[in-house]
Length: 105
Ligand code: HEC
Figure 1 (cartoon, helix red, strand yellow):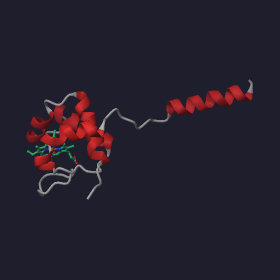
Figure 2 (figure 1 turned 90 degrees about the vertical axis):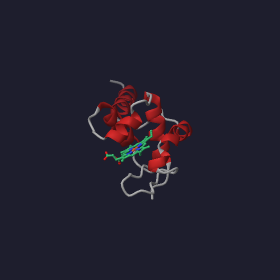
Figure 3 (figure 1 turned 30 degrees about the vertical axis):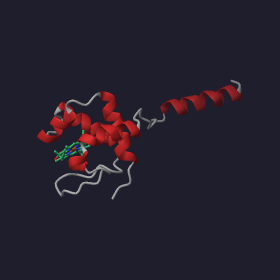
């Protein structure tokens, strides 16, 4: 086989197999949606209360997962279930993009 075609094919194959860590979330939209979360998690994602976790700087994929887990009941917390229940799919991605973009404590 022509080596140029072969290497091109290999490049495409590698590219297709590497997990792409990119989500559709928009931090600016996430900031708006986060107004409801700020009372407990802080305006900048740093919580003032010892029993509420910081969200600033948390990994985006983890935030998406855990918010969906609260929604499905996979992770069980009454407060958070009530908070994330009404969220639309894209809000979850915006919120995750916003909090992960903020500097951690
Ligand atoms: C009334 C207070 C309160 C509000 C408002 C609130 N949360 Fe929470 N949040 C909590 C508590 C308490 C926990 C810890 C629950 C547990 O033990 O799982 C938590 C946990 C979380 C976690 C998991 C953090 C981790 O490190 O695992 C995420 C993500 C989260 N909240 C996102 C949000 C988002 C997004 C909003 C707004 C839509 C929100 N929260 C609003 C109280 C709140």
